Image (cartoon, rainbow over all chains, first blue to last red; front, side, top):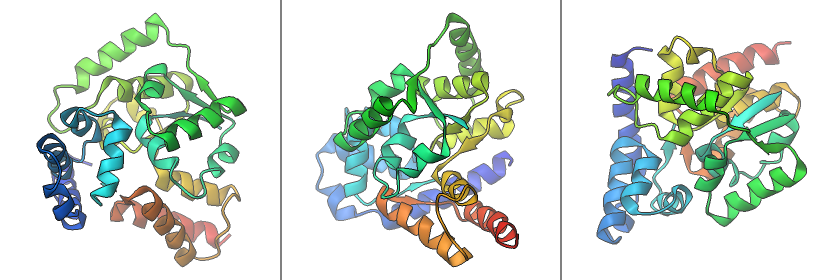
Length: 73
Length: 183
């Protein structure tokens, strides 16, 4: 799989995360959690998102689940 | 069969209603101490503790030579803009899988991409939960008699773990399963 296909895949996965997300829940979060969730929607990277949120990986994942943002792999 | 588990895989798998199949599919699972330290939530901690207690999951004895291999891999992939950021624990798992000839259990897109182009690490077999479920069927741990039943198994996992499997990979798995069902 080449770089172009990876870019296409990234766009497709981002769109899935955006469309499934509970945006009302996301907007109601404190700024750093909201920023982390939006970063995750854009990049799909749980590790960096957890760092933005100041949480452990699975503490962030719990919030991701509540925000209804799927992991797309 | 031997595997190495990363944190994302364990976090997601610990939520799955049929998670016990992993213990039947693998003889031994390895985990790095730093991966273990990433786990904090009760479901993941309880699940991993039970695997450690049963003896199926073991801490991998990390060596200075492993550390050198990690540093080399980090230098090769960390500046590649095509690779989603990979943290140290992700790369440690990749090094362990390569050195021990184990299947790497991961839900990390960056890890999957490294194994798609890297001359050494492309030899590592990476399974996401999709391939674990598929291989559980081939090993008689989940019984399905049609593609529709397989897709229902995937839907259960997607619901439990809040996942969506990539359609291209589901289609590939479905093709393999169709061939297997013909036997």
